[in-house]
Image 1 (cartoon, rainbow, N blue to C red):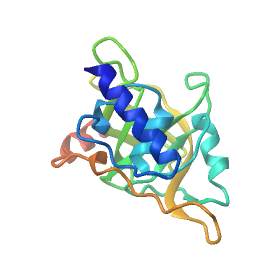
Image 2: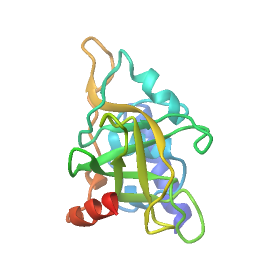
Image 3: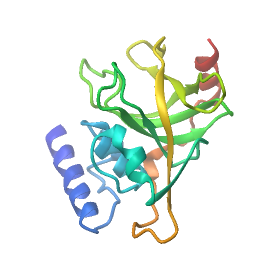
Length: 192
């Protein structure tokens, strides 16, 4: 079944890249995805940027609005680091507090012993000294909590095109967030 889901997902991605619809067919739910973070973030956010995750920040300049405040549907762009050689991209699914949010992403935690799986509404917390989202901690399913590692972040790419840009307005996937996310657990995770 996993092969069918992957093929269906990538067929939809291919159609989306060529101007087709971005909606996933019933047999290829967004959360069934297994693979890299970049194609997942593109499908989940609707933001049409390609290439390694860490390059999204610069690629968005002049195309999509960018900033340092989280908004639902925005893509958070992690910088390259020793632990993230290609960076990482994830999509903000919920803003919980000024320093806690939930994100939906792929290829972070191990599930069933392998990386690449999609995860919905996981906790991310701002640990930057200036409260500017430049350094974060991410919840790991493997550890069932926030790790001790911190990760540098460039900022958020929003789905709104810059005036005069020839890119479509992004439309996040309907599965970006769950119907009943656990806000209390996210806050507890962030402040444990």
